[in-house]
Image 1 (spheres, rainbow, N blue to C red):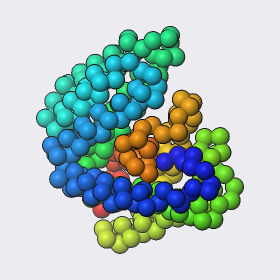
Image 2 (image 1 turned 180 degrees about the vertical axis):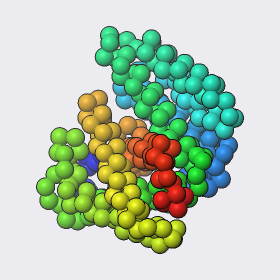
Image 3 (image 1 turned 30 degrees about the horizontal axis):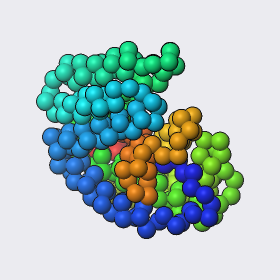
Image 4 (image 1 turned 30 degrees about the vertical axis):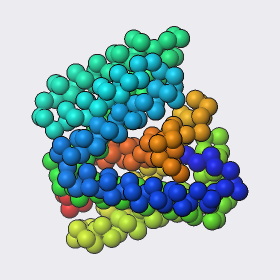
Length: 272
């Protein structure tokens, strides 16, 4: 998550952040564990809330209609009719582009918001429901993202040092980024132990997951800076909006499901 919190308040919001995490993480894990329609409902809620946040952040019109289409898009995942899912996605994209005001830039912004949000929820559902051991894959990847976030947060603030990308996210540091990659590499080692497979593949995957998650965080931070907002919303105490919280996980879900789908033997290499 891109963090613009002033230096003197870096740890002041920790209790409320932890409370939010203790409530939301079990809910997310429960939806992923159940999969199917349970996960589709969770994805529908996520898609609707994130579309509202995007529309308000970017001043895109028809926010409630786009949020509704986002919800129905996610609910269509488990019915096994790709044409319905594609039609809902295309409808939302067309509405966003055609209803945007103030010229081409606004149309591009509105259309990109639909692609951005829909791709994240679609990536998470595919990661869980793909033709591999989806429950394990999703829980591993989610856990790695949370480990990356936690390591970056605590070590970055404790150690400080040079900024990673000060123009995009002023409080992100190289110490936090390196700690996040290290933490995910360690998680990869233990995942390999659990699955009884080659350590190198899982350690490398852990490192890549952390890099992708941090890239997703920085990308969303850059978007917020261009829209001149601190948070995408206020639904999550201590975290801001839902987009603020799932940007890294969304990027990992897209990249992870694509890797498992397109790279022959990758799932087998990870014991999935």
